[in-house]
Image (spheres, rainbow, N blue to C red):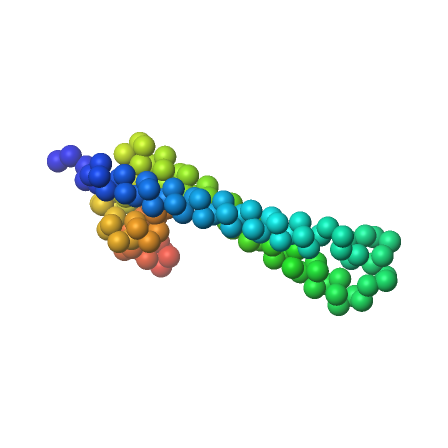
Length: 130
């Protein structure tokens, strides 16, 4: 029996959806980078000489906000990579096929989580270590 796959029409729709998400991620990354640059440029707390002239709580808040920005940037970068891998799976014909049970992952799941590589049941079993 031939392996189950999505039709070319559905794969094209998935590709379009993923490309739209990639565009949104790039925009989010630009916004985050701009916010980090804005927070660090001209900020007295960034200068080693002026640390003592700024209230410690303000310096701590600034540091926390920068760290949070970098965390968001890393998260978005990882998501971008996962979406790119999903596009690769569309190209090589493995998109939407569970890597564990090799069944077709439901279309609803692939629309919501286009970087999914496991069906819901296999993912739950993995989390429960079954």
